[in-house]
Image (cartoon, rainbow, N blue to C red; front, side, top):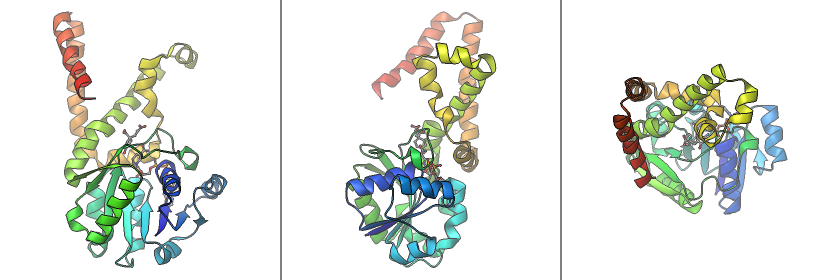
Length: 276
Ligand SMILES: NC(=O)c1ccc[n+]([C@@H]2O[C@H](COP(=O)([O-])OP(=O)(O)OC[C@H]3O[C@@H](n4cnc5c(N)ncnc54)[C@H](O)[C@@H]3O)[C@@H](O)[C@H]2O)c1
Ligand SMILES: O=C(O)C(=O)C[C@]1(C(=O)O)C=C[C@H](O)C=C1
């Protein structure tokens, strides 16, 4: 099978590496826009050939969209004339808005996937080995797809060592909000709070595991995350309100010196140990 990847940053580049490692593609085509990306992709030998979208549509059985979620939506019209046997798959972090934007004539071809794995780095140089192995991928609203495309997606993710979870897109966006989008909003806020108060020298000298763990994802791409917050705005607003009420609660307990209540509140959070 020939596979085309549009966007060869962290997710697309790491997928190209996985496809090569498991010999899953006869040929891997890549599409990138900037000269800088093209040069890095060639230097890193991520794909067999850099090409244009028309060549991909002609030659590929599967085309993967590994670009920011708003760009996924704006590129969809390019695929209106896709062959009915060609699978298009997106790897975006949001699902409902993307699925709603897929033109009905190509909905059967379009597999909405979200691999629950990543890092805070971006661009072709961020591509790493083994990003996908042992992790989960969520596939949404498969009832709207042809079996050919569903089977192809299942085979691909199984062969690169992923666990597959099938879910409704609306449900996916709520879970992704609490377990990924809210944590990113908190991490960006924490980084800004600390940088407003501390100078770079103190951060470098004194930051230990706690701050490093909590702030790592604040180094993620603003471009990618603005699109995600925009597409999952409704759920994110609700989650931020809930988080704020927990912050108010801890503030009140500290203010009122309710240390027994504080201990109980922390012990409740500790029960996460039993889950993760
Ligand atoms: N980073 C993560 O941890 C993570 C995890 C799961 C899913 N995702 C999703 O995967 C997608 C890609 O994220 P990433 O982390 O690989 O981002 P990235 O920035 O590392 O890579 C995206 C690449 O696509 C390029 N690009 C953007 N628009 C393009 C277009 N129209 N045509 C061709 N190239 C284009 C960019 O220049 C960039 O090199 C996003 O939708 C994101 O929400 C990201
Ligand atoms: O580990 C990280 O750095 C990530 O941000 C990965 C992460 C997340 O866990 O929130 C980011 C976005 C996703 O769509 C899926 C995974």
